[in-house]
Image (cartoon, helix red, strand yellow):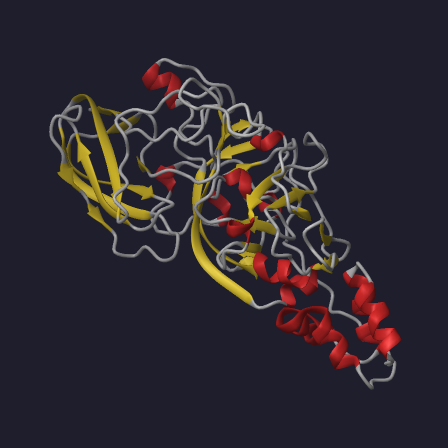
Length: 424
């Protein structure tokens, strides 16, 4: 390769021509990606020096998750185990969960278009572009899977989980799907690091915003989108996930690839990811100006937003019981789940006298990565109408507050819940 060819290839603003050039010199895709991660376009071009054109090798066909859409349902999974909220939401029943990991069959669903997408992985592409990358690229499903994989256990929760409690407990009805306590799940995710993909695209030092865009075209603004600050996008635990609980990512959960942003609200974890836009300026969209924004007297507007954009989750706890619950009198062992974006749950307390006195629950020592914690306690259930409240605190010193200022969309409600129980 001459110096002129090198300069011409280096000036190309598109990763595909560079890949085609490297492939014509006998470099396979895995080697290309490794070179890009190690030294960018310069490393690729250096490896091409002196190499003659050669034929390319075909890629293996990707596999898709099994299953067809359930008849008369906008979802692929069976909605029977869930509380069906609307054509976009399946709420999990915490009482059906026993262990740390939420089975895929019981993992809640929240879509922003009225149906899960049925995409073909062989046709799917991930475009990375924008003014703050020096080498825009387009990756296939197999190319994303070729990148070094990373696995972690993390809970995923809708920003509106517990939303109904603004009305039930505080008498202030908010807009949006009236989730109770089940718009949350805990899973083991596998994927490529978003930082590796951004490195491949030559992310620049002046990058500020990374906007993730889904392929759910029926959502407003063509594709549901969420803007991450570059620091969160480059966090080594922010993933482009293609597996959940040892299985190919289910279609209801974003197959072929979704974002997994641990500790952040569900809307940041874009499903059916198709495009990433990197900008040297703060980006504003519907989902950080009028939606997924805390709007209310307690939340002064930020930037172009009507309030304070929702980003990180808040500490919460909930009992794994129906709402309301019905139990036979006698000694009962009750369990539930607690989670925090700031780290491990250090303590969960419970009260059956309206918060006058509190007892400590047993908290599972198993809390890997960003997992929620399972807690349990013994309760002497006496006949009548009862309530049990729980409150959690984490290792960083965060605790559930006694009250939460109202916001119009009903996000991030996390005050202790007085769970009604009829004991017979």
